[in-house]
Image 1 (cartoon, helix red, strand yellow):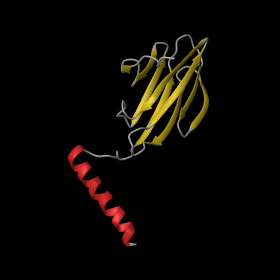
Image 2 (cartoon, one colour; image 1 turned 90 degrees about the vertical axis):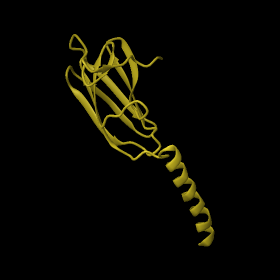
Image 3 (cartoon, rainbow, N blue to C red; image 1 turned 30 degrees about the vertical axis):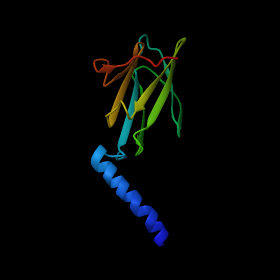
Length: 132
């Protein structure tokens, strides 16, 4: 028991000092909802396939103005990532639909248009598709 205390106590001291000096080492997990809405022109169906390193959310087919929604909790390391493939007509694109380093939203509502995904609608913050 005392050998465990000899290991744990120094680690707690290092954690306290590091947190006090350089900010938090770990992020508090947060609940996130991601919603993806098809806003493609010409009433085209959108096929969406989202994944993380741990989860495969399966293939979803969205008609115009339909949405697909999923929720999760971020990890304590600030490295949560979900990415999605998007297919319509003869096009295939992909995008990191949630990344802890970029997104500060707890309700991340994405609208998908041909030019790229837009956070909070087409008048919101629009991004380019990821490079292949």
